[in-house]
Image (cartoon, rainbow, N blue to C red):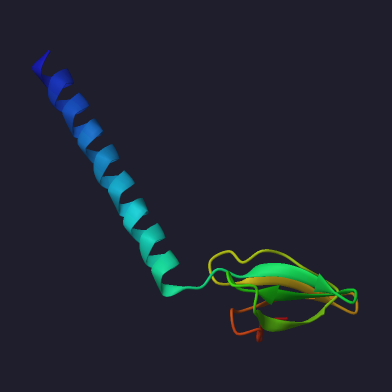
Length: 91
């Protein structure tokens, strides 16, 4: 019975610790980065920030939201990933 109680306590403890680590990582990611949103202008996709300012000019045929600092983009039928500066980092 004592073993089950200790095991249960350790399991709960590990879940709480893991949960708090994920929250810290998410907060650090949000603090260190600016949210960018896809926007379509004249048939091309670019990105704006929270204030509505264009930060990556509309030049893509298609694009996704940013995840882990990268976004999927399409140009002339070719696909790749860009970073938050708009530079193609994965062709």
